[in-house]
Amino acid sequence: MGKPIWIIRLAVILVSGSGAMFMQLPRAIAQTADPQCGSAVPSSQVCGYADTDSVAISNRSEDESQSGATASAGSNQDDWVDAWLRKVDEARASQPHFVSPNVTSHVMLVQQYRFDMSWQQDPSGGTVTSNYGAAHGLEIIPTTRLEVGVFQPAYLVHQSTVQDGFGDFSFQVKYRAFSATEGQGDYFIGFFLGGSFPTGTPPNGAGHTILSPTLAASKGLGPWDIQSTIGANLPASGANILGRAIVFNTAVDYKIRGKIWPMLEENSTFWLGGALDGKKQVFLTPGLVLGGFPIAERLHLSLGAGVQIAVTEFHQYNHRWIVSVRFPF
Image (cartoon, rainbow, N blue to C red; front, side, top):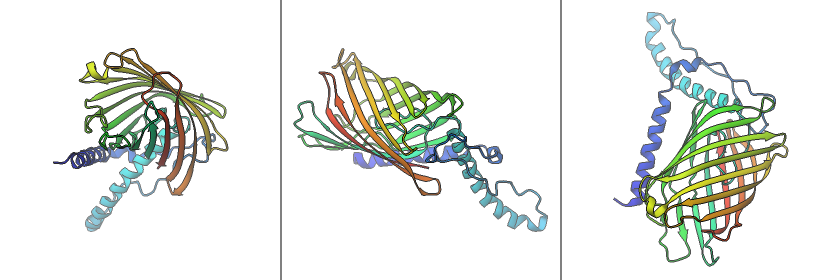
C-alpha cells in the first residue's frame, strides 16, 4: 500500500474517532443555559447563541408515539450539536480573547481549521524548502476545559535533490487549568500534550514517535498581550540520533480595533544529546494577523503572515516566510 494512501486512511480513522467521541457527550448538557459573553469580548469573537428546540419531547400520548419518536430522533441530533456548540461558547467566554500567533502555539482553547504554508532557506541560502500544512489542521473544543487538535501531515517540496513527500501526522491536546477573561484578570494557564507519529520518511518526517509536553501561560495588559510556552520534544525511540529538545516560544502582540494584530515572536530551541547536542537556535519572528472576519453564522476567517529570522550563529534554516489561513467556528 502506498504511503500517501496509508497516511490518508490513518487521518480518516483518527478524525472519525474524534467525531465518535463528540457523539458520546452526555445528553444532560443539552439543557445547559446559554453562556453570556462578557462586555469585553471583541466584536470579532464568536459568542453564545440562543438555544433552539433542546427540550426533549416527553408528554406524547400513545396515539402520537410514532410521530413523536421521529421528531425525537431529529431533536436528539440537534440537541448534541447545540450542546457541543454551547460548550464551545462557554469555553471562549471563560478565557481571554487573544489572537493565534504565527509560530507560538496558541495559549488558549481554540476551535478552528487552520492551514499554514511556509518557505524557508537552508543555512547557506542556496535552496528553499516549501511546507504545505506545517503541522496545523482541525482543532475542536469538546468540553469547556479541553481542546483536541488533529493535524494532517504536511507536504514538503525541496529545491535540492532531497525527495519531496509527506511529513509526520501530529496531534495536540490542551487543558485549561486557570483562566479569566478581560476585566477579570485577563490570563490563561494550561498544560498541553502534543506529539507526532512517523508517517513520513526522513528528512520529511522524524522517523520516530515524539511526545511534546508543554506548559503555557498568557497575560493581557490592555491592548497588549503576551503568550508564552515552554516544552520539550522527547523521542520515544532514536534519542541517540534526534536528541531531546527544549522549546521556548514567546509572542507579544498589540490589538488595533479588534481585527489588526501586529506581533513579534521569539522562538528558541536547545538540544540535549543526539547529533545536535549542545546546539541552540533562536529566531525573531515579526508578523501580522488580520481578523476574524465573519463569513456565515459562526464561521469566521483570519489571515496571518510573518518571517522567522535567525539571530544565532547556528540555525537549521533561515528567512522562513509563513502564511496562515484560519477558519474559527
